[in-house]
Length: 84
Image (tube, rainbow, N blue to C red; front, side, top):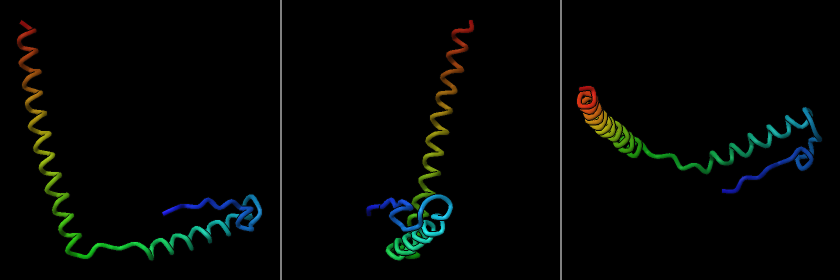
């Protein structure tokens, strides 16, 4: 999936603002061509990957809440010991 850089001189549009329409046209044509090559997931794949993402978010949230709680308690205990 290579990308190509088109300069105004290569595109035949000259330079400066006058070259913009040609550059934009080339970009849109390339974009359309790439979008035709995209393979979109079917509905079952979308549902499955969405479920995995949502489940992962909740698992990581629980993990980080637990770690935060443990570290918070540890720091509180450390302050109690050092504050005496």
